[in-house]
Length: 150
Image (tube, rainbow, N blue to C red; front, top):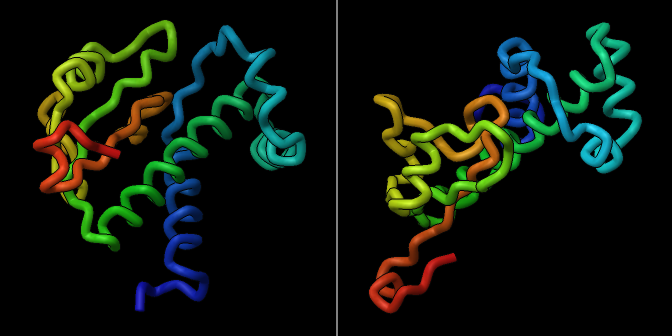
């Protein structure tokens, strides 16, 4: 048992959101008009009302948390299916990309999904850092010799 009355993935999502609401930095979001349209209005309103924050900040938090939850779910699915090897994919999005993430993507840094990628002296997963839009590509053993990855 994982110590939660909810299904395992839902518990992971809830814990991630609670943790990350406390640490998501408040930064200006320059292209907010386009991105705000793609987020559910009730989520933005809930964040604004519950935490007393601006619509722009609520949109930033919602986008960031959605990326983190998606990353956590993908990681869990890969581990559960025995797919442990992946390579870092830089999103090439954002005005101020992290140089280490750009380099990891350029080098197609391979890492064990269970441990995370060693970047800047710490083990992290794509999408874990605030406003990180990176992802990973699963490496299928046996097929990678033929240049096949998912």
